[in-house]
Image (cartoon, rainbow, N blue to C red; front, side, top):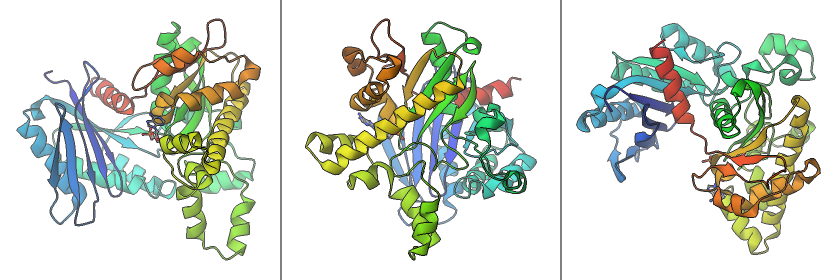
Length: 396
Ligand code: AMP
């Protein structure tokens, strides 16, 4: 394993996810999560060799204390000297960052300057990156952006049908997210259909708690459903997705505060809002199978909206080599995939039931019948992309 490990960090406002990726075999040697930052129960938990452990953090700067704990942990496990780089996930790179970059003070400042576009994420990333730079002063560190893959979208895909001034003055446009996931699964899909990625086109459907669709032409993102923020596009676990903006004005006039409206649309809508039960897809399906009306509507709505996006993205492509399902729901939920394919029957999609049942829990595979248009399941691996991109820059 020597000198092949990249530490991947995803720092949030009250949590910090980490994984130590072996870049030779592609597996996570160690993975963990710091959470409840700012609260007395702040802790770091991790999994190593199949065993789970937990460590309570003392009072103080929990991002720094968590990263310090990771340093102590990799030292104890004898892994520290094998770490060659640190890769950080960053949600928003605006128009500034179109690919992975090496971290230095000016890059940190630029990421901080983009906080206007991602107020919940970018400041938290910078805190984690500074803590990591202090903890691993000799290692090169890199920022990998969720938005970067979508910077190839043409103006007709990223421009809002609003006055140009709003774009020029405030940068209001479609940015798109989940870029590392759409990038990864499209490369894996090209291998599956035995075509060079530069000559293949896919519609990638990332269905997790957050969800987005991406049209990928010759390996490049040409359109995607998340927008200025991750709230746009598909119905998600708790986010509403596309919605008439006048509803916001309507609710404000009804006396709702701005915070209440956005809390509703971000945290109480989607599967949770429509089912009235849960944001967890498994819970929705279980309730639907027991005849629950709200859960049934949530399931129908979710699958209909995904199919509508997939259908509309046919327009963005000249040909289509396959639809890719990925992330928690896309990789595991046979009924959701089945219903989406049924909704796409006008395009010729026909589910192969046995193949759809088999492609779950980490198993990839084609899930449509022979001689019908292709749909496939490919487990995503965003940490692997972050590790590989960091390593590529390190060796560049
Ligand atoms: P992610 O954000 O990619 O971790 O995905 C989280 C979502 O995946 C949640 O809505 C889970 O309910 C869903 N999920 C995970 N496993 C399954 C499963 N076996 N069947 C249906 N949904 C699942």
